Image 1 (cartoon, rainbow, N blue to C red):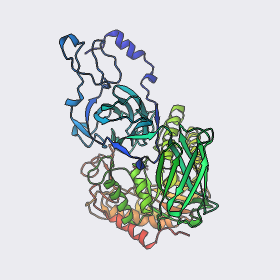
Image 2 (image 1 turned 45 degrees about the horizontal axis):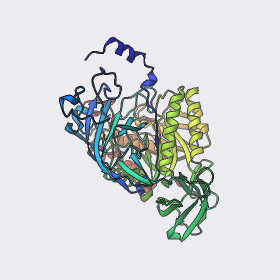
Image 3 (image 1 turned 60 degrees about the vertical axis):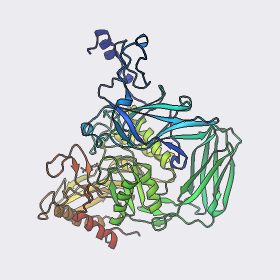
Image 4 (image 1 turned 90 degrees about the vertical axis):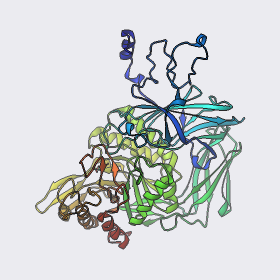
Length: 614
Ligand code: GCU
C-alpha cells in the first residue's frame, strides 16, 4: 500500500516527539514478590510489526488496524466496515518472560516493534486496585487492557506497574503489550553497547491486587552510628493523614507504631538490642511486617547491616572488607539469551561462590530481582548499575531525565536488599565537561535517594609511558563525586602483553577506596596453545597471573570484579570459530566450561593471596 501524498505529508510533518516514548501512568510497587499475584507468564500470541503499523495509524481511513482493541471479524456483510487483518488468536506464541531473539531464529537480530497478546480471566474485587506488573520490557513498551491504553514505559531493565483497575472487567480480559527494542541515540543505553539487544518482555508479568490504601514504599535500615537502631519510613498510598502504621519484627518480638503525615508518610524508628547483623559470613534476614490501618499488610525479608567509607577503606558493619568479586552479565547459562529464571540465577551466583567471591558486579544494568533476592540469602555483596554506558548524549536534558528515572526505579525496587552496597551510575564514559556534570548530578541523586549506600562508577584511566614501564593515572574529575572509585583496565589484552602488568604502577589521585571493576581477556574454551598465543586459555590465564600481583601493589585497592564470569553475546564480537557473536572474556564459557583462568583467580581468592580485609 503506498501512502497517499497527504498522508505522507502528515507523517513527515509530525515532530519527532510524536514518536518519542515517555514513561507515563506507571508506578513501581515495592516488595512485589511478597504480594499475592496472578501470574501472566506463559504463552502470548505475537505479531511482528517492523513498520510500527499498529502504533502509528496512518492508514487509509477505511482500514481498521486496531492491534490493541481486539477487532472482531464482521459477523455479517451488513457489519462489514472494512477488512479486519489483525487476529492474535491465530498467531504463533512466544514464552513470557523471555527475549524474542533466542526463541525464534527469524527474530535473532530483530530490532523493532513486536506485539504480545493474551487473555486472562479476572473477577474485580470491590475496594481493591489491580496493577499489571512488568519485571522489565526492553526497551519501550505500551500496554492496553480491553482496548484501553493503561500505560507506557521506557527503559529495558527496571520494573513498572500499570493501574488497570478501570480497564478490567469480570470474565475474560484482553491484554496487549507493544514492545520495541529499537535503539536510539537519545536512549539509555545509547546506540552502541557491548551486549546483545535482547528484546521483549524479558521478565515476569503478573496482575497484583492491592487495597485502595496500600503500602507503596518503605525503608528500614540499620543506623551507621547506632547498631541497635533501625530507622526508615513507610508511605501508604491513598491513606489519610493521621492514620496509623505498624512495623513489627516477630522474631525479635519488636513492634512500633507511627502516624502518617499529610503526605501519607511516617518516619519509623525501632530499637533492636540483639540484632544479628547481615554479612557474607552470616546473611541473616529478618521477616519485617508492615501494616496499614486501611488493611494492607506487607512482609519483607530484610538484612540489617551498615556500609561506609573510612579513608580508603570500605567498612561493612564497621569492619574493613575486601570485595573478592566478578562482573556478571544477565546472560542465561547454557540456554543463552536474557537470564530470567531462578535456575539461571542459581547457576550464575553458584559459579561466583565456586570462584570464591563475596561480591558481584551486576553489569551493566539492574538484573532481575531474583539476583538481588538470592544474593541477600547467600550473603553475596552487590554492585548494582544503571546503563549509563559509554557515549550517552550527556548534553541532552531529556536523556538525563531517562537516567534519573532508571536510577529511581533501581533504588526503589532494591532499597530493601542488604546485599547491595554500591549504586553505580556509569561505565566507561568519556571525560568531558557535559559528562562530568551529568554524572555528578546522577551521583548526588543516588545519595539523595539512598544515603545508606555508597556511590561508584567504572572509570577509564589514563596511561603514561615511563622509563621502566607505564603509569596508570586515576584522575578522572568524576571521581570527586564518588564514594568509591571503579576503574577498568585491560593490560595484557587491549594494551601491552600480560607481563606489562609487572612494570605498571598506579597513581590514584583520590584518597578513596578503589575497585578494579574490569580487567581480563578473551579465550575460547577448549582452545589451547602457548601462553603467548592469543585466544587460548593459556593466554587468558597468563593475563590473570600477571594482573594479580600488580593489583596487590595498589595500597587502596578494596575490591575487584574481573571481566567477566561467563561468555556473553555481543553483535560486535564476530571472529569466526573464536567469538561467533560472543564476548569470550568469561572465566566460564556460556556452556559452563571452566577455563584455566577461573582456577588462577579461584586459587588467589581461596588462599587470600589477593586483597586483604584490613
Ligand atoms: C569494556 C566494557 C564492557 C566490555 C568490555 C570488553 O570495558 O565496560 O562492557 O564488554 O570492556 O571490551 O570486553
